[in-house]
Image (cartoon, rainbow, N blue to C red; front, side, top):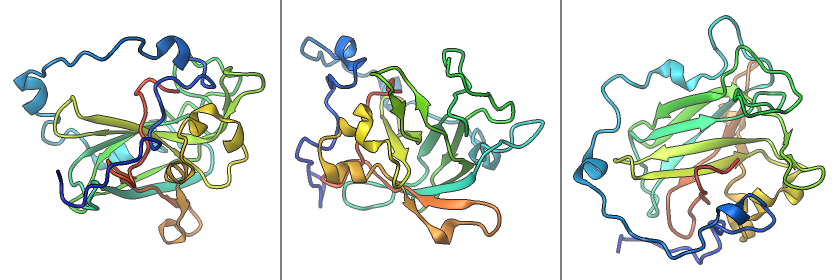
Length: 236
């Protein structure tokens, strides 16, 4: 067992079957899992070539031809393991809706305008101390059809890749004081209130850029009692 590792009590991560989140009902496994051995390539294969991730990839507001519309924000944080140690050089990817609450995706039918200068995707590598930083716009809430008058709170999706393609965690970052928290089955599928709180970024005045952007901090803990709740990669 890793030193200082504290296993969570089973309420940190949402169950695969969460009836309030209706798409989990047909999607949740009905049979026992079958363990498939990984090949050597899956476990040890390189993830990224040299120079594949650039500084420009971490700025979602500067798509070719213009600047994204909406409230500009800086989102930053540190990735740590269960023992509190920083995780350096890991790939952090984000995706989100635009400021009007619409994704740049052909299946998104929300009656909100697309922003031609906002693709809603970005990535970066953590530095030697496990820190990451993105510049983006605050996403809007959007309807999602789960139940009558269902709206998702503003959120940003995060994906973290480890040292192999088989090592991936996905989670969502929310914004403080969102009035939709109480009505969102995805947010509330995390049963422990303290764990849900770890999904909410903190406003960070030190990360704001004067007259330019607000700052939010979102630290991610990969495992253990203080772990950040993670999810199935196909969640909305």
